[in-house]
Length: 327
Image 1 (cartoon, one colour):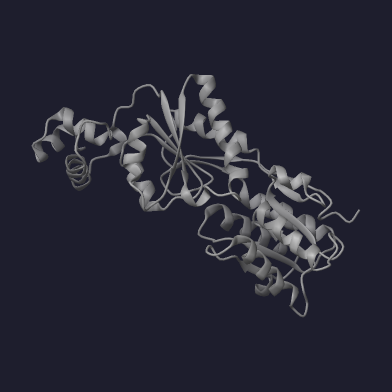
Image 2: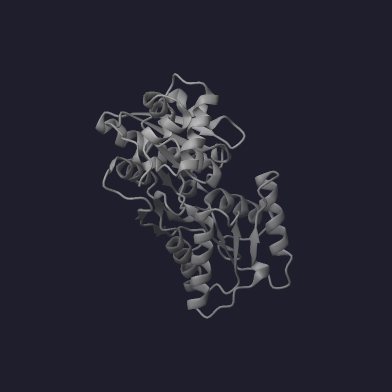
């Protein structure tokens, strides 16, 4: 038999109203009381998805602190704008909250009194678990975990299109600069890169795949990675970067080293941020409709018929510019 709020109240000696407020992460309780009730609920096997949800009036857009940077903002800011637009059309208030695992996340969220949560980018599974235990509807943007509703660009297709384009330009030593493969988006982009090489019967050379460190100065990390690639006996003639910020830094370093773009090094980025088209030379990139990503997240969050684990995929397209086009 399913565990009810009445069962939790009986086990903890609290009133049904107190248990309900604790499970819904509402004000009026001490943290100790809230923690005791939630722990008892988990121990008894209570399904937090059973919490009754009223009409959604407030949504919290949560961004992990690691994405609150100059290099990430050109991507996530338009996503936020898309979510704001979708909420405005429905008369829903949206608040923006930057969080991290070392912070009192639940207290920060509680300050905004949201009815639902929209989490953008990478989040630790433990952090997401704590957020899901609040019982509030939750949707992931640009991330995937089993059992969570999510909206993702077709990252694998993007990596495939970028690499296939470089192959069709006659490039045969194609390198890839990536971030941590623990990120769903980066892992999928890498899979697309390898898929294109496989279809072209080209071996994936481990020397040409460089994973940038997550610590240190990002620009210095890109320069060091490029110096390593350019020092190879058979250096690459093309480069696929997991995002545009990395591609722009790599292109600038190549130009400073006297290489001609795209003659000596063809380069394709990912995300198609505004700086890509205005770069000199203009950067080829995989375009993501970032505002549509935010709007789709809100739509899925408000869809009461959508079950756990449902994923929507946003298509992407290749924008060919001078950095990779010899024609």
